[in-house]
Image (cartoon, rainbow, N blue to C red; front, top):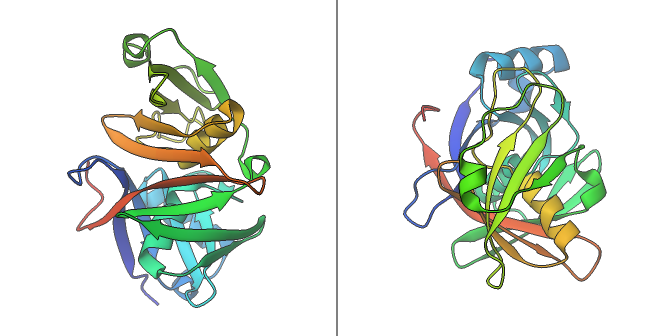
Amino acid sequence: MTPDILFLRVFCDPDGGHGNVLGVVRDGRAVPDEGSRQALARELGLSETVFIDDAQRGTVDIYTPGVRLPFAGYPLVGVAWLLGLERLELPVGSVPVRRADGFTWIGARAEWVPPRTLRQYADPQEVAALAVPEPGEWVYAWAWQDEAAGRIRARGFPGRGDGIDEDEATGAAALLLADRLGRAVAVTQGSGSLIMAAPGSDGTTHIGGRVRAVAEPAY
């Protein structure tokens, strides 16, 4: 089977710009084994590629160009928008979905997030001026734009050495940051992507954003 791949921009700005490009293989049966999925994700070269294994139950499988992920933020927000389900199913657990005012939200636990180094800087200009660090750790660089309003400027550096030097929008890191801060935040990441994140009342943290389909994965 030839995979049917849809491309989405996740965490767009209010005008539909920016956002991180996601590859979605609509029918995972077209790429049935882990090795083939990893090879396709590497070929596409996107931050992440997701395979839908059961569109009715929301069972999905997520890959970067180099590794399989048990959980990731922006792929799940994108798939939640696409499938219109109330839940998605992952190896780590069940992910609730909700929609409001043009945003798609998912809820997850901070312990599901793979390791990230959250590194605070003094101001947004310092974050904007950062050079890409050497591979070795996943660094989420952030600074307050307006602390009272909960507005944050951030950049994400995966540090995996897999060709993705900087992530345009990273839901999992924003989720972890909102959990650590214990408050709702609006994160502007990368060139202008917008991520909303807020702690929930049940031990989960919620991330949300706008999603749109695109014809191809070009930035």
